Length: 300
Image (cartoon, rainbow, N blue to C red; front, side, top):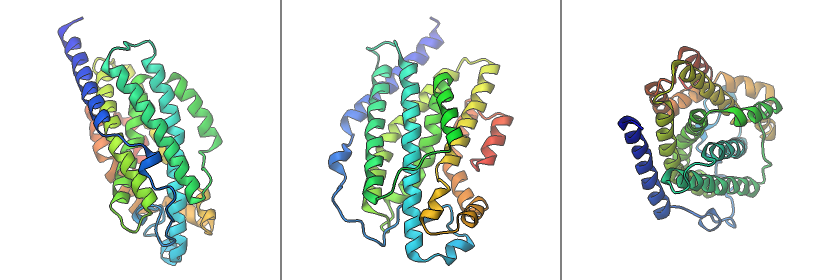
């Protein structure tokens, strides 16, 4: 083993130890941290309304306040449902990546700590949807089936890149929810838990992406860049189900058409993804084909 590789492995191990210490010092149990019995004030939004796919559109201006509240609750339930779906995929990929690794290493132990966190988060989001009285939303059937293939054959940097995409976009959305007094306390508390614990996951994922791509050849790097971009496309396009509009009493066709043209929402997406795009570019993972995909989903 040459000195460069040994130094890189020590860096990963040191970062993993710091993350394990952080997890031991600051982790939450949603079963006790969230007040599951509290009433849901009818005037409180599901998340900051500026994150609604219809915010700022002509249709938004026509909607009653009750419709706006109901729409944001269904939208946040859809985002939570998509989060559960994708976290289940990522858990399988991380387990496969860590299979028969050094069990004594901090890297292996934090990977399992992350999986345990994700299990708690998924239960937390499921209970939050149940508390709001909203059924779970699911991606299109074709997306679900493609994901089966992805979780089986995706490479390590693609798995960790996918973690970064999913969590980075959610991070800014949830930070906005945490500080908004017109948002349900249920959502503010679950957002706070998720933001704190996912910050460790994102640091771990960045370190893994850098480590796995450090000596990657040109073809592998280009393939991984496009794979992460395609994964991002399916995550972003699955976040808010078209079914939320009918659930809020809106004309689904008109709502979907206005959502697709909503420049305010597109700008929010670009803002939330700016740091991630810079990181991926530094890792050589924003090639021309990948950039074209990111532009389609307004991450660039």
